[in-house]
Image 1 (cartoon, one colour):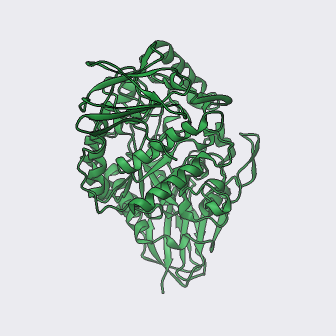
Image 2 (cartoon, one colour):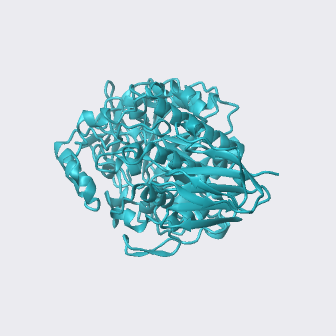
Image 3 (cartoon, helix red, strand yellow):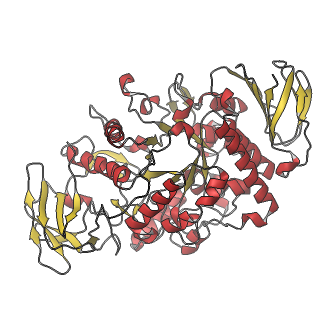
Length: 607
């Protein structure tokens, strides 16, 4: 049974305060301008009481055992930062305009990942609204925003959040977030939130003061694991399940991207993720809206997306690192760190066909066997990208692909992304070859923590020796954050504008089903490792073919005789996309063609 937590504004300045603190003997709610009130404890360790005369905006904290005062762990708003007062909000005061909105199935999504603080110069929820017409013009129908739970200071990736229920104040707080989501829905754009349920940030994290939210049974990269299966874990699970339901029901999010679920450690009979998925199913039945849950996982384990009846967690989708790594290494020839496990054309072909490259293979980087077979899974279960916040921001210099490969290579990469049978995800600015980096940035207030982060980031690049030659950007410096903002003047540059139009055309083709013939197991691939070419052919009734040349030289390729005549759908090196070639509209089966360096062509059979 779910239990509401936090400060619930009822009506007429009446607020119900509920906080879990099972090991405390006395809990009071204290106010900035009125006497404190002692709460009443129940058998599960929740302290609760309705208090009158508490207007919206009132500041409050909880006093534990008459000693120390702390903000509400389930605070809905922290207007003065992570160490100060929590504020009362009326959760039901916003007047929504999206009553007809029912959501979008994952299978139909074209996802655009963005970071609120660097997507616009203003760095706010409100400013995102001003860019929605750009996204609509591009063809985006879903945005996925990096975490927005309250973090220290005014700049952060979001993974240092310490108040999971509070929308970041510097972005615009809960009211600004609701206005942004409402505006997105009015324009037909779904909104997914990146939610972090594997750890809590270090600065302003007072959860342990209230109860056993963490367990020493397991360790994660961030320290002790959240307590999802040890003593008192029922109420810790409730905390995060209530968080999910709040974002979906109260804020009208269309789903969650669940961060690094391999670090959500739960050995109980019902894994937290399965319980979360079941709760979202109930909400979907209640509201009639479509919700999606997407996992970030490096396990290559289909249990995450398998249905309940097959012993799975029932999530709708998961990110696929294998697709990114296979494509990135072929494009860049990088082979350090985890990239040592990739770099072959045959791996790219395998990723194109089934998402997972490691489906039971030995990984030399991890020094163990990784993954299981995705056979029988829907292609729409897998979300793929050629750039995302992790793969860019976790480079020493935060370089995007335009700094690593040619313009023709960018078009080749995008073509590979959209012709693949999976759900495409772009990273903000990718569509116009943004060259500004996306670097790791923080604004912590604790000097010792800042120093630890600075040193820790340097250690993270031990596996990438070639990257350490550059100048390390200080995560704490405001310039690091400012340098990571998008440059929206791309239309003034012909090459960038051409890439935007190219992306727009690819998305149109994707949404019209032009590449659906690749969404089948009836495709064959032919790879030439030495020449770095790949042919993908669908044997469905409407035959479709894609030819990829990842070589820096033109390569001759023989068109299959599966069709007598082939019609050109797209050629990335065409002059219309700022290439240097004119391509005919038709090709004959059996014809040998010269495929330009770092390019692709897509052909369909004429009836």
